[in-house]
Image (cartoon, rainbow, N blue to C red):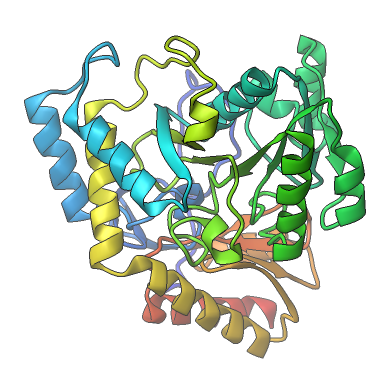
Length: 388
């Protein structure tokens, strides 16, 4: 079933060639499967870059989108809307106390950009500390806190102050970098592009203590690792450390663009009307999709499924001889004995989509949270053949 050779994907000369393309041209999606026009099916262990949290085109999410689009497609944030208010309440309820105020925008980069803006505004400081291997977005401010010269150069050209980057896992270096000039420390509790590397509870606790002591803000970037992907609704819950601001986006609306910054009341009290803004942020349709996504996550117990199937995959790849696996839940990085891009291309030939990371030997897995044991078994079978 998973051995069909791939074909050409086609394309348009008018479309800017910005992205490297997977060798698949889907026209439909169901659950963890993408379907081409001729009916060819692909197992999606990439999840549209961790976005398809409830699977592709989940009927409940699709129905919620259609119903809301038929009632009111859009109006700006100049007017209140019940979906926006309900979603804010639901996110505040699911996040650890005292995270209870929500600002909506349209993407992960925007969420991080706004979190950095808030931290600078409420502290009156400008400098940021970030962690080696971190990825936070492609706006000027987020490029300035993303690791790697090829990303930071864009911020450097624009004159944005670059963050102080501390080594991953080095508590002493982290503590030494945080002084009274620092507005915030931004970390991914489980790094995405960095290879699904999970930060230890000790490291995150040290970040919490040091930022509190120095009057800085702690930002958890959960754009990729949040919304149930790493074994709790937020990754913060699995380590018992609560930040001042938490950002989320990718899996929140099952594919519709939305971002959110959840902050404490203490932080929110340092803001006034007009300090933040977004025309499209928290629009009626994306909020309807997000509310339906949360309902599916609860009803189908997808957070528990992410933990269970993630462990099943970890056990399975260990049995295949892969000795080191990073990550939690369904954000996993497999350390291979060969370039991950070669393994990824071999899996493409078996119609299995996976991701890679900035580390060349790491194969990254981030399927829908609904990924089943049977689908995980298909993945392990394909991996067994390729690694052999």
